[in-house]
Length: 300
Image (cartoon, rainbow, N blue to C red; front, side, top):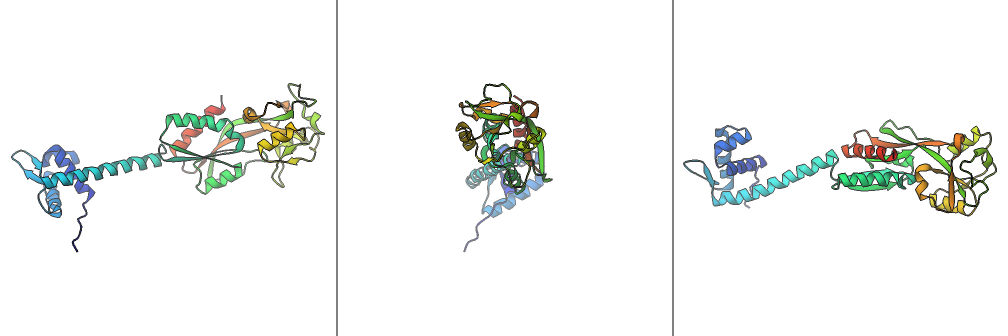
């Protein structure tokens, strides 16, 4: 069985340089070789190719038919390798490939979409892969290498510490109270939390952990009544609209609140949460760029 030739990519680059410059001397200068080294390498390549690749002329060299054939293939190979290097550099540099972005639900109302829109305008070659989930789960997925950047918050009961993840504050977000439009306090511009001591609250607190609602009510001097456990925001809005309770809504989620509900500030007793961007230990440059755009969007 005849053994197939396997051509060294360095030799193919040398072949291309000689073909482009038309001389061994020019190729040597271009690639920082000596002329004798070029002559030896081309002679070795010709032996491997089974015959002459260049006609030696009085001034310079010219490709033979065999040389032209190999040069065409060499250019195709070298171009593909250059393209692969560019794509790999883009992936590792973060401005090509895919950026995996996690966020909690209410961040996806306006904050994250606005930042992603600005990012896509700047870097259309980067594929965006959004993922939604609770903050604790997003941090776990980032630690396991599944996310490149995440938007997380300390609502409803704090943010778990994770020394493998970099946390960057984005914005302090006031929690507003959502009331049905016909609520007795709906006409107020601001509601005193103490006036809501008899209300039923709709939320889904993690078991065994103190929530921001409980802390705020404690500062106001009372314990909130038993809550209706609803986790999804659309469900919370539906229960509030039906007069079955009230709920806290982050200010960044205000655009998603149905028109039959009203949002009111709780004034000095209002709880606040912090929204953060999270990055892995060795973040992609594109992830840091997105964090900057998130910060800009949060400041609008």
